[in-house]
Length: 109
Image (cartoon, helix red, strand yellow):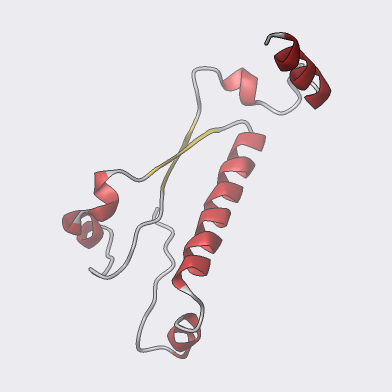
């Protein structure tokens, strides 16, 4: 499935979107994608954010039903990983405290 946010010049909403700077729109979409990744990982799935050449390819946009002026911010890949147990909630992992990392780095110099 394709999740898309799109400007449409024929709607009242589009005129409101035009008032929001492009960088803020891209930032909002990026934050949303990051939240989707974090949620997927919290549920035990693997998540990977990619763009690559397909994000800029006219044929890819057409195939996805996008207009030429639409921008693809992310392709979000979701699934299980070879290390699925590691990402599963409830699996204990030892996290090093910040003080441990700082002192370890400082002492290694």
